[in-house]
Image (cartoon, rainbow, N blue to C red):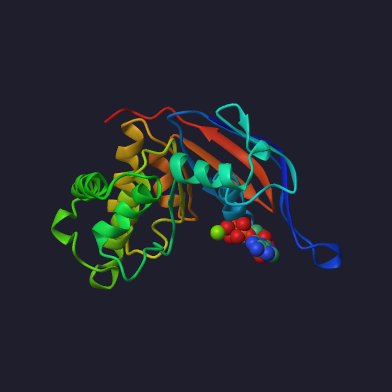
Length: 229
Ligand code: ADP
Ligand code: MG
């Protein structure tokens, strides 16, 4: 699905340049669940942003379903992000003035889905994350774990090919973190492709592929056979 070829990401220039990524090669197949591990500052978020077409490489190339992202213009990139990628962030990034349901429906409305249909689908997605009884609540009226479940529902609205999660359990206690991990594992079992950044190695024994980073490079990639539960 995604092929990252000799990708570099440099922020700034001259003496203050930071080489966040230094020649990354990575392939993500349809149906993979990839955990991206590594110490703070090693380039995990930078790589995730490139995978999600939120930023462009300084050098190298990324293809998505055999299409080079470098060939897309701004409008095409925006459409690509909206329709093919679902983002989940450590800080949830919900819109505070919108209810849970409105937050989930918003990307569908951006994609041109009618209000009635978008609301209906939003309700189904909130049901899937066991929050249908909170659909009219504002983010401020929800716990961290509930906010992250709303964010997961929102990420699924346009039926994305790829889900990108940047430390999705980073702001949660272990019980809520576990619930979010279970949801993501279930989405993967249903066939969703997921790349998740984490610096919590605790989760990774359940994940089929673990990629470790250090100083802007991949240092290790493990593929594991998991027992189907
Ligand atoms: P991680 O997610 O693994 O903590 P990041 O990808 O956020 O790492 O950052 C990698 C390196 O790039 C760090 O040294 C960070 O300070 C730097 N960096 C990240 N984003 C920017 C930016 N927008 N401008 C300048 N430097 C940045
Ligand atoms: Mg990060």
